[in-house]
Amino acid sequence: MMSHFSGVSAFRLVLASGNRNKHSEFAGFFKSYGAFEANGVELLGPDDVLAGSDSAPEAEESGGSYEENALIKARTWADFSGAPAIADDSGLEVRRLGWAPGIYSARAANGSDEDRVSCLLGELGDASDRAACFVACLVIAFPACLARPGRGYFSVEGRCWGRITASPRGDGGFGYDPIFVPDGCEKTFAELGEKKSGISHRAIAVKGVAQIIPSVLKYYAMCGLNTGK
Image (cartoon, rainbow, N blue to C red):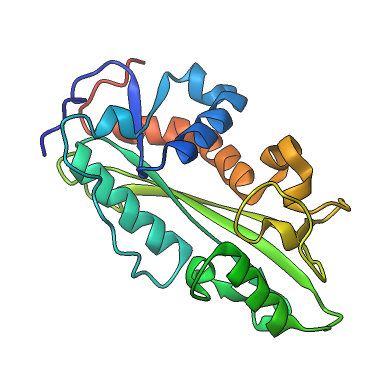
């Protein structure tokens, strides 16, 4: 698919997801860090990218790490749109369980988020060691038509350390949020509300991306494209 974004003056970054809620979340993150606005970075969502298309591109998360899975998604959307794309892959790692479920967090058990939470708590039992961390890896990948020698992508990982509760608490968030208490807090992610957005693994990773944006733009410029800078 040829890009209708080529030749634009701003640096347009496609979010590799058809989920509008995720786009809103990432747009909020980007707004929090001035580096994106200062460098003219615009985050495009599904409504921008999928106009005129029958469906969103599908990416099989067959990688063996967060980075590999995020890269698969980013490159799929980058090649689909013809523009640089950003994707994330995340998971929960529990020390007592050998740092599982990790990259398999979203499919650690069949059913709903509640089913997966119940399964994890069952495996952990009454163990005293409940140390855990949420991990998020963000990858910015360039489409094959723009990439130059080298990796053709940038990646940043964010980790939020904490512990697993004995039972779920809170109605906010999603996934394993009701059983994860970040270090320095007494509330779970599901109880923290807006405070979560400033301390989460994904927020830490986005902050890292903000720090490398100048390098990303330099790579973009070296591809012979106009970054508007």
